[in-house]
Amino acid sequence: MIGPQEILIVKLTPAIAMLFAAVSLLSAADATFVGHAQVAEALAKGGTLVKAETYIVSGSHRDKNGQVEVHEKETDVIYVQDGTATFVTGGRMVGGKQTTPGQYLGTSIEGGVTHHLVKGDVVVVPAGTPHWFQEVPGTVSYFVVKVVKP
Image 1 (cartoon, helix red, strand yellow):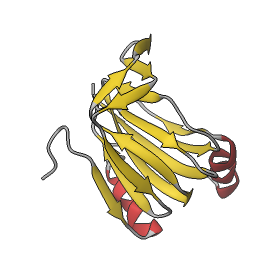
Image 2 (spheres, one colour):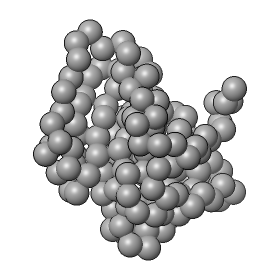
Image 3 (cartoon, helix red, strand yellow):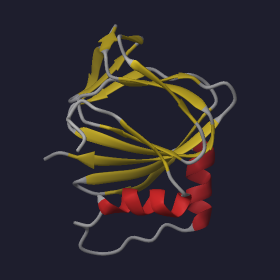
């Protein structure tokens, strides 16, 4: 079992990875369909695909490094669709500032764990855990399922 501050990285087939992400959506009353054109656009430019009270599904695309993030009430399930990145989790956020309620951005992480992400990887980042796309050597496209604590 994964502890609250442990990070899970798994190599999965795309079908199994999406099934894994969909498990968090089981509480939805109605099915939601998102067409392939909208999904492709979200992976190319970034954007929210589905938003509900207890989850958010979005596509993201990066061609440069990001800022350190901490979400107090959101667990991120990240599935790498294409590309590579150096991703850091855990440790302590440096230079952190609250940007909106429960959301923080920082400049770096001290004492974190570095992961080399490639196509097919899944990362589960528990709420409250610092995480950071430290290096994106080319581009990386990924889905994020945010499971929101009440």
